[in-house]
Length: 613
Image (tube, rainbow, N blue to C red; front, side, top):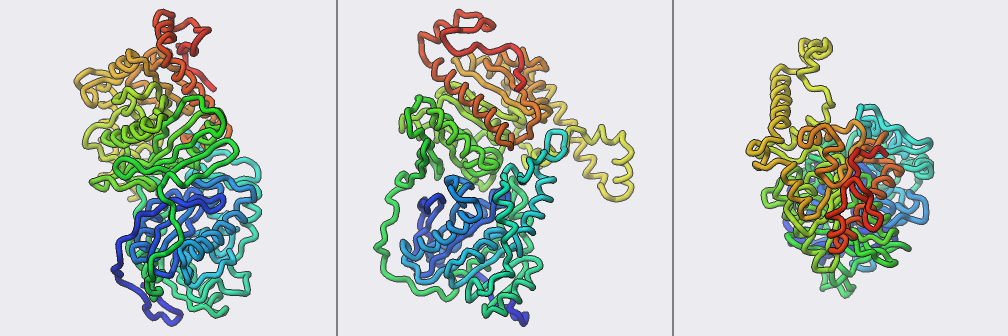
């Protein structure tokens, strides 16, 4: 329920409207965004929050944009400069974000012909929207931070829970910076955040304001004192919107209230706008000195971005698969950064969203494409799309759940020559597995409940009522089933799908394909490697064709810049190796050369020991 200062209910219910036009990509200076045209003369700008919280909310934010656009209002959402698919700004991050908000408002006025502007901001995005100085008619603030210092304090607390090393200790922070969910807030950004204060301006940010969230009364009274009509209400589903990167829930009821406020009494539709819109997705390009990117839509509603060198192209292309539910730019924006780093080395890349992730369409059953083999069809659609553009990938790259899908894809599609699989949790998943339970259990740590039962602390928590016996028994059962699965994984006929990993690798090697496994020291996925290929990394390397690389001192997501640079070197070498291996004369020479003897005229032979970097 939404109320005014006297507690009167103001808004509620649904609102019928026309079906939204398909959004088209646009570039606003350094910012990349999506614009949905509409006939009404009120434009709506969505300003998401920063980093990890926005990654959690990304899919839901897209749905909110579609809801508003469906009511006929032209709608624009975007990634701040330095985030998502946007370009790194020349200016500091916070001033660049404020400038992007003003550019979005200008776009809606000039290109969409909007006479009125509504801005909807989430968390830090709400704070920035209110301080941007843009002239707007309505403002929606979803759980805003009163100050930038409050945002910094909350993110510092979150970082200790989110960013973990394999031993469950917090990821070490660099001096004068803060990393949250692999997103880095640099020293200049932290300094600029410290100067943000919603209570300081002497002018209200909009005549009509809606504030949803906890502890908003002080801000509401401040804006009322400045002359705004302010409505307030709770935001009960905030945590599930911005804190769960894998299984977030879209707050449908709250978003319906936001939509109703945004479109209420909007000016009537007018004749079709004369302002030109992008003719196609491919017409939207973002470029820098070393790279250029094009957006494309292909297959069953899939969206991707091809990143190419601006200089000479080596002929190699890397296909990047989503990790978890992260949109195509990657966890901590690492996929976008890696793609652009590869372009500097003359290597192209294609990052795209599987169905159910980012900006791609829903899966037919509404499920997520996590650890499901049928998502290989999306990967193959990307391969076909790139093949038609003479960019057939030679290497597929995946991290964690993306590594699982990349492994399934290279086993099924001979167009792929190599795979780089980072922190692969498992090679196969038993049919009927509860994926959400499996993933959440993987974060419990290395010690099983059966082992913890020997420890007094667990029994104290049971007797004190903190843990239920039923939950413990179910967890012990899952641990037992995991051990049985590991034991049967190397037995033909009992392995998932009826074929062992070793046999599939043998078939891959016969066709000339190879897999480079990369793990952080102590990562949980190393257990799957041992279960399927034995504990000897030397033996695994012979089956894979590439070494097993163990990276010391890294977290599961390889969050730090130095760790990403190590991954870049591995991917670059795999691309060059795969390109050379496609030469038939080289293949013939390689076939008669002993595997432990270096090939001076071709790619390096696969080491028989694990590499520790």
